[in-house]
Image (cartoon, rainbow, N blue to C red; front, side):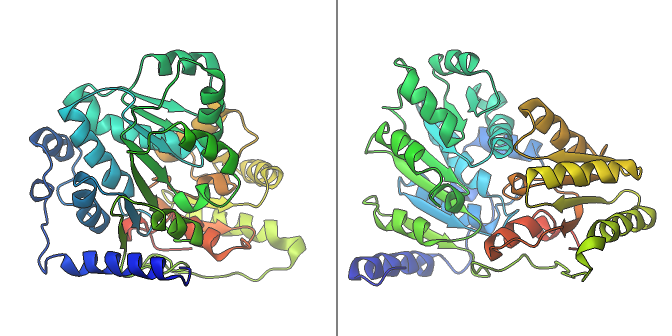
Length: 373
């Protein structure tokens, strides 16, 4: 937070919002105002009660307010913005209704799956995932069909805005930044500027993230749409999820890979069905470690930005399905991806930033699951 008086006033407004929440808040999606068709879809997905971030953020979004939701990884932030978007879209469906930006291709695909799982049957939702590594012409044709929801990475969406004269975002109702702290760090500034200038000023802006940052704070402070800010009460910028055992293994640099191999082999012998993610700093390192683990008969997939998109998707699918028990990855796999059965996260290189560490270890112990780091 900056020290000017405007910021203090808006912070007080957000705190008042939190204080106005009832002592016994509603515990069902029905009491949050969700339509019967959404309730039916959620029931089919095995989702019966809202998580805290959904409980607090869905009502102000439905009320038309800008919103920032900050909650630990694995707490259901995607549905916190997807459900109110689908609810209001069903009343007056048109395209393009909402734009969702994410920092990685894999997360964009996952968000697309979430929208599809709720909206495809209930309202014949049309969504398009627009990311690098996919055919640009095919994406342009898909966008020309005016889908309801566009889920994209900033670079590729900005390219379409610059090169496709028939593509317009002038009627967008919702603009969502998922993993907002990463998107606002600076590396996407030019593309974000291009996208935002194409959006109507009357839109609702929704920001969701697991870690707060000054950039996130500055965006919500600049909002004139009665912004609502909710931060998980047990969250700090550098806190990890509960029920997470954190350990370190001190090794000589030249023996680090040998220790890693022994650790994973021992883990496989003790718990054959356990899955692990090994995080590396560079793409080259991830590829080398992946090859090494495969040589010692560990079922391994690798995920990094140098891989072609179809290979990245295949690696992630193999790991999610349990065919591969080890995923060796760079930080493209550290944010947002819902891989619920991860038992062990290994930092082959300790990240320089504590926030990156929080996101990495958040791949395990998601929503209280998982045991070991």
